[in-house]
Amino acid sequence: MTLDSQLTTRELSPHSAMSNLTIHISKSPLNFIQRVCDAAVIGSTLYASQWLTGNAISDRTLLAILVAIGVYSMVSEATSAYRADTGRSANRDLAIVLSSWLVTVLLLVVIAFFSRHSEYFARASVLSWIFLAGAALGLSRMLFRIAIELM
Image 1 (tube, rainbow, N blue to C red):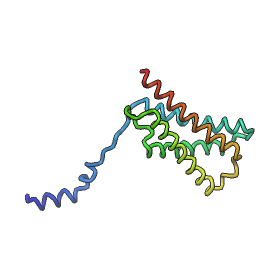
Image 2: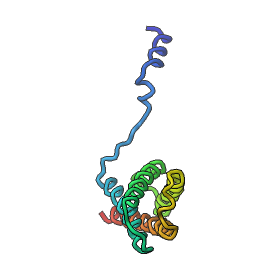
Image 3: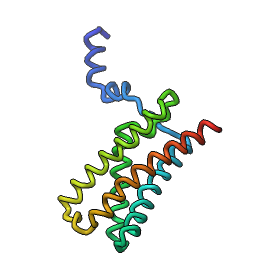
């Protein structure tokens, strides 16, 4: 086999491009627990903000929670918020979590606008949810980080 035929075989092989792709699968239960905690924080803070502002909780609230959790999960994956990086500072970790939440809020506003669900939620409820969830996500991340360091 000549050098040209080896190159042609490698270029045409469907597995050659995939051999350079690395996928890091996290098998850590701590990573799963962090994701569940984030989902619980997002859901509970929306319920709390609706209760605090006197708005009724309905099926649309549950739908908003599910969409928010889905969008936050995708955004936090893109910003590597769940990557277990021991060299990352607490300030950097907090900045990543809060920027993920900010991008999530912006995407949720766009989704709510185009799906015409924005008029269901009161502005006071949404604003309190944005700040309450951001603070609770940051707090839960820092508490989780402290717990890991104590182990």
